[in-house]
Image (cartoon, rainbow, N blue to C red; front, top):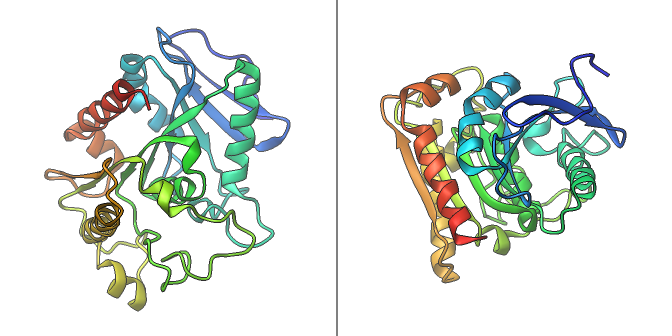
Amino acid sequence: MDKFCQQQLPRPGARGCISIAAVPTLKVHLYRPRVLKNRQRLLVVVHGISRNTMQQLDIYSELANELGLWLIAPAFSTQHFSGYQQLAKGAGQPRADLALNRFLLAWAAEQQLTDLKLHLCGYSGGAQFAHRYALVYPSKVASLVLSSAGWYSFPDSSVSYPRGLGKWPIWLTPPNLNELLRLSMLVLVGDQDVQRDSSLKTTARLDQQQGLHRLERARRWVDAISQLQQQLQVTTGIAFHRLQRQAHDFSDNARHSDMLSVIGQFWKSVEQEGV
């Protein structure tokens, strides 16, 4: 175990790092709010491919204080979870979703929680993980925030996974689209996040289905989800927010746009609804 990964929970207003015996390859960084208001909810923030876990923890910690919730930031290392964006790289490979679930099970048992749910939030590759996790475990999720995902699994059974829901892998937990559609969801992306950089997956089929850049792909996914919600007369809806004058940079988005205030207000509204 990393010498910086302590096993004792941090004091109020401090951060720490823990791992559990059931999944020693997953280190979980966490921040304890100064005043804990709801033990049954966790803020879970998921990093992109830069694995900037500590930056995520630092930036979201004040929102954790405002809400009075534990802040959890799992570290899906390149060595152990290289394909975490799609939950796993393939059949027989370590699954990031199961690793997180094992941690949550241990957390709930230790804290004696009976109704633990997540305010799940991901940026870029973390947003890919978050919406696919919520698709297969919607009952574990209180709300879903997706920021600047490179691409999505569309609610379309005629398109094969991971671009859609067709030909779903037998080794992966089956999806539950109907329950996903009932979650409170917020999607954010910079209005200048239109670059086709090296970190953006680009193929002819993906470009045709989802668009040429993150802004277009986010808009199309939100439209697809919203259309299904209307057809099923789901009342929760899905919110879409453009970050003004922002490209693809987590730190810039957080510090030089209204990203945190929008996410914070979204989380507060969900908490007030008592989901």
